[in-house]
Image 1 (cartoon, each protein chain N blue to C red):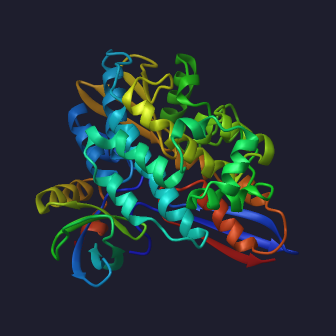
Image 2: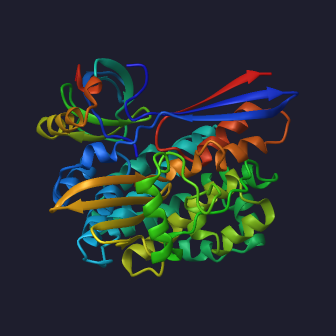
Length: 359
Length: 78
């Protein structure tokens, strides 16, 4: 078995004169939706999705349920977003407590991550609020979320938490890994016409779900496209641009919003569904890595055809956000580690490697 | 869209480290994020960490589903 069956992302960079001359992104991620789902009832398909997807099982299961209900004419039911939001929060916490401290040479915080992964659902919002207040932010999330540009800079320099020190490292220099790919609209911005266009392309175009574009352009999806208007995020974006620091900060901003969103209704939808045409359903679910779409065609109460369009395929498109971000890396020292950090900032849901060749 | 492929724990070492068998391939993983794992249990692994512990019945069901979907090579030695 040469590669893992879930596939991986391999990035090959050619260096010429100390700068990135070309970027080649190869994905071996298989498109398995039809193979797994065809012939199953909606109930079987939902159970299967929860079993076979490891990081986003709740989001995948909910997407199956929402898409199948819409295909049967059930419309856009008010799905409970809580399990999907808890899953999203745990993924963000993993990045902020383990992956990024490790990349920055700081100690990972395994204990707090373990606590968040094990806490019962009814205590989750309280546990997350405590984690934010005591460990990540050093102050109540509501106070931190109101910080403007000067306030955010002050927190980076004097905040005291390990997370503040982490952002201080990224915040003192211009952001790197800038992508010019337009943000994919977050779920709130989708309407029936857009959903129909996407569903038709997913069903009809052979490789659309492997290399998607929106209105002829590649697009970036992720926490950033959901929280860009929050004060600390807007402050960072205007000062540093949309690069790796922004992508990391977006996860912290979204995590800081979640205790309130988990305990009361939120204005931003997490799950939506449409029926683009009879017998077909499409669902969109916001996950930690971005927008996940499922499209299903039912016949006689069973799945006839199925497509899954995952966020990794938008962000790791061969000419998409990652390719642009790597191509724009300024020459200078630590080019290799900067390229790796930029790749990590887009957070593929499978293992990845970055290889260098000299021209 | 990473697949949750059950891997069997074949050896547990110090510092929450373990060796798992995934389709005949052995890998080092950290058990720091799951509790109560014993040799013979199945776990779901992602980038070097065991994410969840599965009971054998659940693991076998998942492996059978994956084999049914044509991913036979990954279940060959599991």
